[in-house]
Length: 241
Image (cartoon, rainbow, N blue to C red):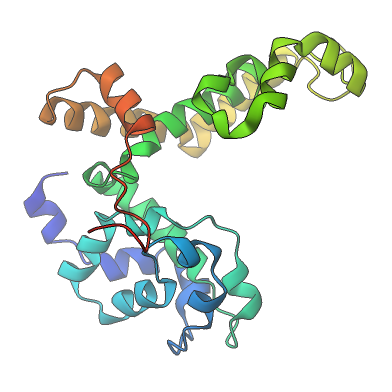
């Protein structure tokens, strides 16, 4: 979307079209309970109360800044905010709506954390469409997730024996954990993606990312790897802006 088109858009009205925004926003009194209980706010420069307060201004410039920021991508969507809010609001739902709008407008590529949407989309939707699972052992590269530890590394290196010991039905027909998903079911999943707009969304994320990659002087493979690996170390309370 061209900038003049986005500037003409009323972001608050667009957000109000999202049921998650309406559910999470409607009676907020900015008490800050959500921030106090939020696990992300404990570590990140993240304040869900302030996010809702920004939306309450209905100021296009402020909301656009939010849509292009790292801030909306810090939320883990744990919904702790919903459990403690005295008015039963959900800032986490507000964040979901902001992420949706940021993605739709292509603003997500303007932030370091937002750019991670490309590798995340490829990893999760790729697994779902090919294997029927969000996370799948064959595509889990231990070198990319060293936080999983040496025990998980060992299990991946001995996956068949590990699955047998766990009683899984890994890659086999019939019922059981990590069973082989029939092609007919995978075809149905693809059809669901097509009908619901998920396939178009994947293409949109790829197209926006490709434009940003060109702007950054990278090929798309380098861009995606950079989005996955790069960390500016400016996101935590004890880090520099």
